[in-house]
Image (cartoon, rainbow, N blue to C red; front, side, top):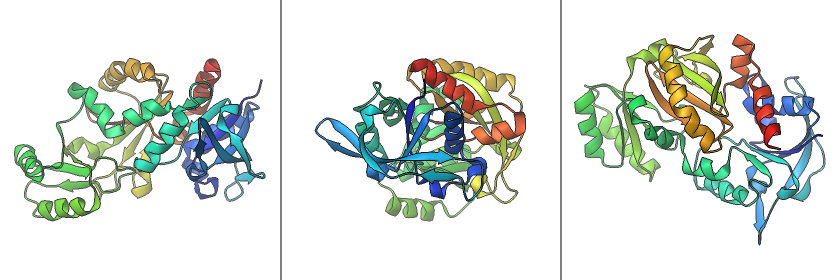
Length: 312
């Protein structure tokens, strides 16, 4: 029996289908006979205990520039849906957090993927700190003297916003770099939250692996190699995706964190691994599904929908 699936996302007209995980999930859902309904986060509303949104019937197709059709919008109680995919991109700010509070009112009667309460309680750069033996030396603070001392201890470091995404605001600061104070002053004016500083891992020049887990189990991976003049490997800032196989250490990392991810109700997760260390656990809107299929043929979208259908 087909499911009624709401997709909470940035507007479908803005996505680039060749590398968009949400689009891949929608294609698979449609192929299985599920009904798709599109809405953006700003359409959410809550009156009393009823969480609703103006949702539009959606059809998708693998044609760049003509990849979607939307029907007439209708205000709908989201508890009437079977599944909601929580897929808008970060930043993980108060607007994002508010949507998790609202969606929590309908979950699990309507299955929200990923679990909104778990998403709210597990920001990507904080969840990873539950596994200190698997991550590089990391400092989370707004005390700038502490960050300076951290650099004196480790030399080259990475400094980035705690709730940033997509490589935005990620800086490599060398041991002798004279820009650290200016950078911290700039961040002070931009963010109220703490910053994150991590020991720089030279192994990033060989790539930053995105490993995707479904229901706590390894589903596939790609390697993302940064451009020669950039410390960031994110593909939309110039990183290059390539085929990869997992090392013994990477399998150990996945084996260590997988049970916890499943316990928290995360169906789709993307982790970032550099060398022997995990740097982030992405649960808000994980990406990489289409790249994995392109390089290895593994259909992670099908795995995700198998997991969803099992719960429904």
